Length: 196
Image (cartoon, rainbow, N blue to C red):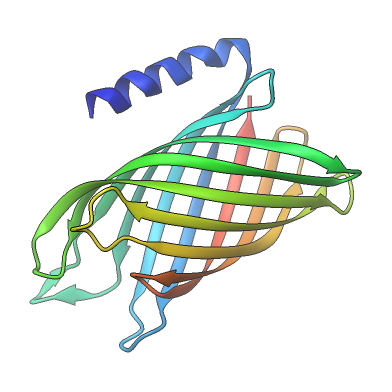
């Protein structure tokens, strides 16, 4: 955890030399298997964009499955994720790139009913196409897995959606996603980003 705090401090200290902002995300997903449990996830990610085009952020997340078990609400699981993204203009209006990350997941209930913490990583190729100056279509594919073979956290997620620039500093986005692997869900994601 100390390494995450140190890296986050370095990330935020570089904000004075680059564009910075924050992104808020809400996800609602439904398991494909009965009883089709629903999960809500809230994320906040302060970021900086460096002069070379690399976007760095630290994402804090919290998720909880709807309902209860033995009269108690399901546990609230948390995560901290350090991410780096680079996008390249390949054609007029078309950008291709990728985001990579390492993270730590806290207070997750495993198959035995115990709570565990573990580290994980993601690799996410992305594409966007600017339809207008304000509207862009977006697609991504994310691979995620735990660093430990003892944790079932391997998934592949497909996302499609759009982003709309409300102003020069504000952007809203919508995604539909399908997640398959150790957990199988379909869901929607709504995001709001504000640059400073």
